Image (cartoon, rainbow, N blue to C red; front, side, top):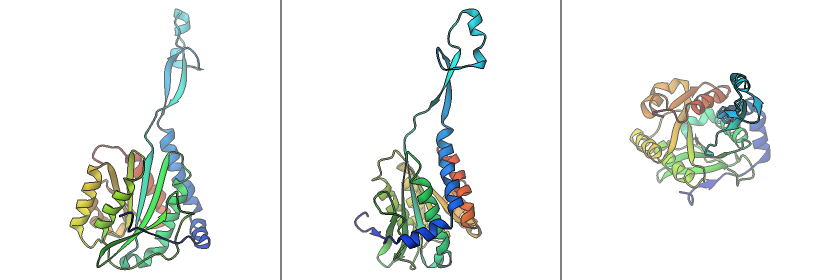
Length: 250
């Protein structure tokens, strides 16, 4: 899979144009992941030094120690996030949203400590799926030039390929976000690929267009997808996915 994955060309003008259109959304999605990290801190109580613990102010009067507290950050495994973007024929009218979604996620996540990020576009031809890498830590930036577009929608094969590529990332937790209109060539392949991902530790969520909600629900199950109407809705959709990471059944 890695050998067959193409690399898009980096054009700084194209990248800067896409990024400039979604500055607010980039800040929002960055804050979503930073808040997730902050939420995992807690207070250690009963210490001999630190900040005075107002819940233990009675202890000095009984000649007992341990009336201080200190905030401690719970250790967590690092997170790998993959973004898989459908650029098939049915997505032709949504290519601006595809570019903006790539800009939001890449610029938002690559600057958050402890998170690795990679993004791929895909389309299909008679020989199967064609994957194109558009962003990772080795590429010079967000690569949007000479993207292969059109063709079929082999979403199942694309998800399976992204799973293989994400398993090369060193992070223990892996989340794959699939941006699509929800119309794959083969729904059975999608179901098999999602099952394979989830059974090997890669959580898969779809982010699709609102009008395809019923189709996405049938493929990904309730809680396994979010719908948006424009890129303005993307940070909120990702935030809901992030808040649900690790929840039972997801």
